[in-house]
Image (tube, rainbow, N blue to C red; front, side):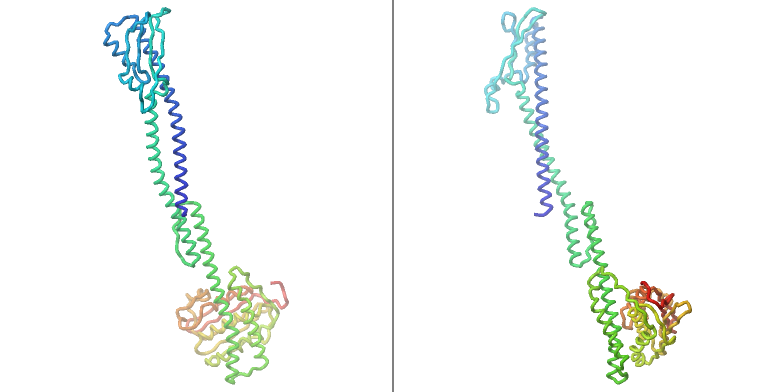
Length: 453
């Protein structure tokens, strides 16, 4: 059974119970009040008849027709007959209901009993006659009372029907409004479950609106998780290109007889295989949205040696394209950093320079200042970057309009900046359109001894 039907049935039962209780209480209260009113009216009528009868006996009947007519005015339910007697018991005047006989024998299929009350008429202390009033056996069960009760019950029944009809209409409107919000919310939840993007109209019911807002927040979190997973997947795919490209270059060079797989090159291949294994082992980063960032693995090593390894791995590609690749700087320089992140950053900068340089070459420059600050730059003679694009070039998935024909996913510079910032450095970009670009990894200091991260 739907919620709408359940609500409708529940509200109908509540309305019926309310009408029944209200009708019962109202009927009892009004009936008791009316019965008391009838009794008071009867007592007042008796006093009026007694006063009329005493005056009639004192003054005598001057006009019998007028006196009987006036006496007939007092014959009203529950009084059915009035008789005035003098002191000797002689009837002076009488009046009765023309339908008295029928009322006495039958009234709506039942016996209708009467009772006669006798009252003494006096003039001062002297008795001057008697008054006999014939009435219904029970003043409070008179025909007037009965008709009033019938009319009251009929009115109550009609009122109950009207209230019920209006209530039913209000129930239908309210339940439709309520169930619409619930139905829309249920459809919204299904849409979220199926990965859809169906908007929901805000309900006017506070509780339902609160539920809709919770579902909307959940949908936003799921979208963020989806976007984060995509970004992590793209990042993982991008990071695996570095070791794979270096391994492929060495293997192709060895097959073509261009390079010799000496001990240095084999050690470089082993290092790239270890890097690739580490990336594969951390595949759970893509599955878990809120996984913590891997801690930095800082160690003291010779930066120049690592730079030359990366350049050596990419040297064959540059030579095949007719580009020079040179290193300028000291022959040794020790740093205390995460070698993998720095190598990844350098590789990204070199591959970007390779893609966007058609002639000339690329220089890798290492500058060390006396205060231990150092800068590692990649300078090319390529296409260059327009001034209005320099601020966008390292945003995730951004591709310059001038680089649409070049392969890439727009993540290289974004990952490079993030990695350098994690290490406490900065990525600076200088470029002249049509002349070339220089990307610099800048560190403010170079501690040669291990220190806390």
